[in-house]
Image (cartoon, rainbow, N blue to C red; front, top):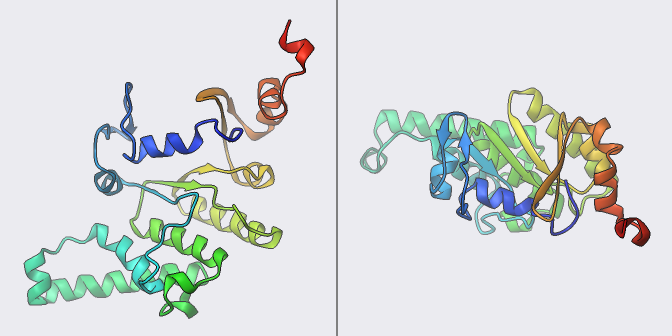
Length: 224
């Protein structure tokens, strides 16, 4: 968490290869991912969503998820062209996985719709489903509750909790403190690109540096 402009999305862009770090190292488990391209980092096990939804709008809801699943395919272009039994079996498995994800996210009834025709909340859920389709070790969610109404936020909180409880590690950027405090095990706070706090949600709520970063420091205190 952190005020606007604190550097939260920049961190995600560094982690996922959109930006290259000037110094330091980024590891996913024991694997060094510095300098890898985004698709290579995704293969290593890191998937993300974006502040602004980035779906393949012309593709169907189902095909958006299948694109994510195809990151883990093992068949070659030749076997795909020849439609070998192994390749066909892999395609069936990917289809089944995609359909399971759509059912979990409540999107199975709209599987054949173009993604661009989904309501905003459904597009958000589809983007998370597509990220999960890559079978990540780490799932990065960039403001997933942005634009949601209270009912949608409650449903999202339950969904993120379910993802976490199924063994996925989730790194979340979010401005809704109710959601953050309701689902996060630990909270890190950025301000002007610096981590100013890191701890349990209850500790963060009473941290004076965090309060000052969000609310500002009175002018007389700033001059002390």
